[in-house]
Image 1 (tube, rainbow, N blue to C red):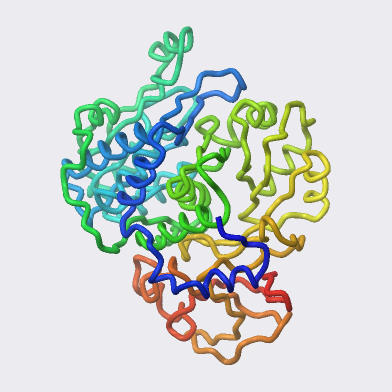
Image 2: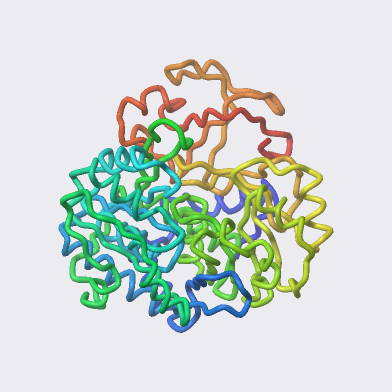
Length: 465
């Protein structure tokens, strides 16, 4: 791995060669195949339905994971999904969510949707992305996701096929006996045909049935915005996904690392930052419970899960850190190296409490959906400036600007002078950030740097605040 402890290290990496000269895969499937060939029998992804440190878990090796993603891509292609068509998923975390995400991006474009949105918003996203296929849950106790999906599908006639994931397969007796007796009713209110995702996957060949064309294209559509109003839909290309994965491989993880990610796979932090870093480096990722941090017992059992899986990197957010600090560290967490925190500023007191309780440093970072996520982080092996989101990653150019509404640059701000954070990197698509062209008007400074709308400053050491 390259050294990344300061701005000087970042600059040294960039000086080696331009990004375009880096020997990186062109497509997502090419990237996954290289890793599966390099580490076929090492663990890739693990999911456990319940949070107990001794509860059953399903672990897939890289060879097995590659096979399932291949079958998912073949299935989607057989259902009419080409490079310009969209597969959406409305799912909690489970291994099938990963198959849908990656298989959808290989066959066409994939559109993760937040299950916490209401049915009208879900339907609006399905219409905006033109989704032909929706992967969602079969009716199951203690979740309303299938009911929301049925309501949304009635308002999104463009969806032709629904693939249902049945979480029953993760249960053991007596729960597996009880669920069929209490499974909620969910009458269809739509015209789409409904198929069983697991059954249809098993019918597919284990080799790709179509050409994986080696060209950059839109591969993912992530909605962005709050849970009120209609979210915007941001586009992401293979090149941006590959870049995010390369950062993880080059600067952070190896195939010997294990990450625990209780964040939802509809969000870029989990789907792009974590999954792409894993696919690029060969690191193992553990997903505890369908609801992640919201899952029953996850906080109470968290430290024991660290011990069970010998986790080296924790993926978290400030609200989760605050909840964890209400629990004693009641397990062996000596395997931990770093905790990565994003999505919101971390209070200084919380930073110190976590470090004192675990002996582990928190690395804060910054990213956004519109830039295919990663922008900066406090260098894991360098100085951590609490309150800062760290040094911009290699090949990410951050400017602090004063812009007019049309994106014209009035002036560039000086050291420690506050202005709008504007970003250019391989994850930014100038002129094509959103699916709605009107939303891209005035969005780019100099026509190249995405205007984030966030205020910040760069200090004399190149740290972003």
